[in-house]
Amino acid sequence: MKKTLTIIFSVLILSNFVLASGFQINEHGARAMSLGGAFTGLANDASAVFFNPAGITQLNGTNFMGGVTLIQPISSFRGPSPSIAESKLEDQVFTPINLYITHKINDDLSAGFSVNNPYGLGTKWDPDWVGRYLAIETEIRTFYFTGVLAYKISDQLSVGAGAVFAYGDVIIARKTSLTPFAGEALIHLEGDGSAFGFTAGLLYNPIPEVSFGINYRSQADIEFEGDGTATGPEQAMALLPTGSISAPLSAPSNLVFGLAVNAIENLTITADIQFVGWSSYDKLQLTFNDVFDENGDKLVETSIRDYENSFISRLGCEYKLNEEWDLRAGVLYDVNPVSDERVDPTLPDSDRLGLNVGFGYKITENISLDLAYFFLRFDERKITNSLESYSDGAAPFNGVYNSTAHLFGINFSYKL
Image 1 (cartoon, rainbow, N blue to C red):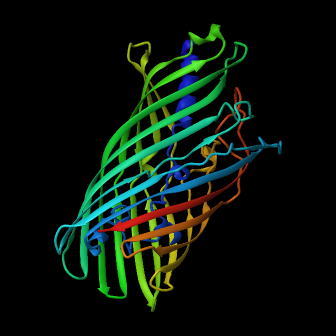
Image 2: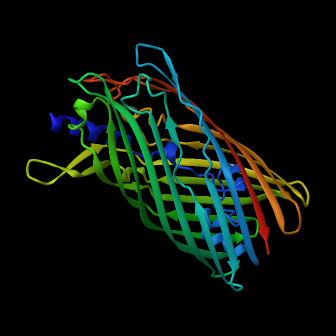
Image 3: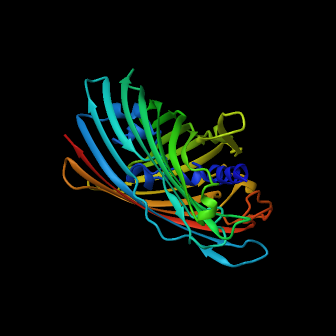
């Protein structure tokens, strides 16, 4: 019996311990955000440390930039089929930050530093909803600390590269049925971990009106360490595995190609294509450090995830109205990496279309403000072949997910 409940516990944790497309945050500056994120080929403010480190060679002096993005996800589920009863995600607002510092060391060499939250967000459902055996609460946060150097090889070509230290933490909660015992248990996991990675970029201006950019951000292999707990009927608690848990998890690599064109006077058009290496997340292996198998080895359970590589296409435009005001707009289309069989309420993900608007205002010669609004519409996703079960036995969690999100970004910049 203990082995059976141990496997149930591990499957519950494994199936929720994810960093999929819906948890990847690409909004790391209000200006870039209002361009649909198409900034790799332009990269001419301090947020270039994240978007393309080669771009910081375009900046003179010392530059400071900081801001926050407010993210409000909205999601509902109708089902499980054939039921059309609707359950709604609880209201939450997430606040990923961004901070940048750049300094021009000499005419050719520049340095930069940034703090970002590239993966985060979460979901929270009613503790007694129909999908409570799949998800109640999931929240993931990551902090990436990046230091870069960029070198201007010629007036047309710059390169940049740097090191990344990543720290992440996670909270996961859901319920399980304690058959043959009466009642349910609440499974709760908290953990954190860290990893190292790198970033590199190139910026090329063949003519003054056109620039090309490339940015690569490496995979980060985070070793999460945490504690699992369970609460429920006293007679079953001794049979549920608790204690120390560890799980390696790979945040995917990103490769971005960007273009910026000064189409006409005062108008710049930008475009990016971003490839996300989600195929690195093919399985998740969970080790119970305090639970042992019949051979005396630590119990290890594996969950197959089989994520697919995905891409995001982006298009933006910026119009310089006058010396103080810049007007911006953008659009993006993001292809999700999760197959229909693996979609669950931890991450009600689907392909999504984003519409962006914003503006920049030069307050003084040295201080500027950028604001952006981003509306994200997820394609309705109807699941008919789910491998996720919402009760004991084979009870596929088929149904229809609908999701949207509102994002507001604000940044202040100061130049010395």
